[in-house]
Image (cartoon, rainbow, N blue to C red; front, side):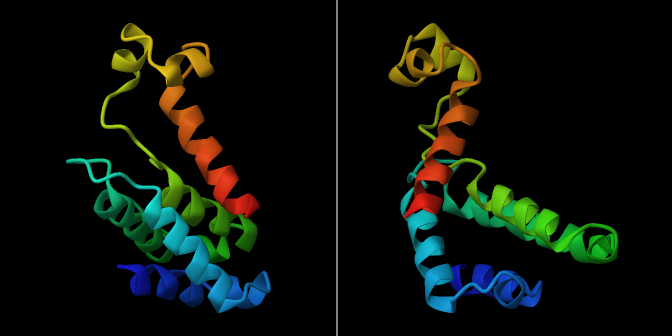
Length: 125
């Protein structure tokens, strides 16, 4: 799956367009992989399926000719990172159980805020 993700980024010409070293992409993809938990659904396989669907939609709907390359890069990367470090329980559970995530994000979309925070932390490396 890791190699196929790298092919998606390469095939959409993101490495050349944004001057991304292949090793940097590999390290980024590995960090993303490491931040998906081994849970029944919101795991790395789910991440791959969502990212592959986004990649397919970009090609099938000819988004390359309709959107800027940066927008496509954001779309693919967002799909890749959309459930980072998912604990396996939804927002309602987080809020009702008063988990650390719910408290940290003041009961406002705790999972989505957490996924985004993890993505930003990975990108900052």
